[in-house]
Image (tube, rainbow, N blue to C red; front, side, top):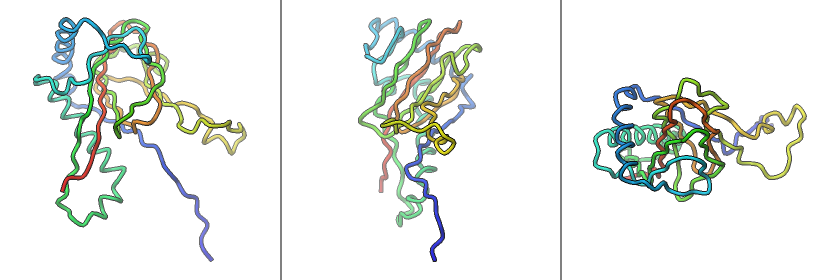
Length: 214
């Protein structure tokens, strides 16, 4: 007789990484953003944006030392995330010399004005997305400037009995912290709570594909 089993299918992974060198790059990052914004007055206009400034989508291509440092950190975290969630598949590869290649497809920064927020949206045309918190006030919390993710199975209703506890929660919030990087599958709907702190809320976001190179 076979054993009973409960299978876990299509789990969702949210990676949380912390940059130990954040304080060394923070000031230079903010200065770069100020200079960028002074030269590019017009913010990208997106339906998901409210009361904020958003750069173009290619800051990783800027010839700037501090941008290169933070891009490398983000790429390394994308790589670590991929290796961990696909460990079983990597173990099957016969050619152990195969390398994983991280391709940053887009990257941009956002500076939030008071009350600025991003409404729920997802990112198409890529595998993984991220947010890196450059600056956030000490007054930030889960209700002030946090990043949230919506559950992906919103079709139909879920009964609110005890058996449905695992599925009833419609969203999960992550507190913004300077130097923290969140990574998630790009199809997940996400956004940011309005930020009412004293300091500007400044973040970097990026989209990436990760594939095997032989």
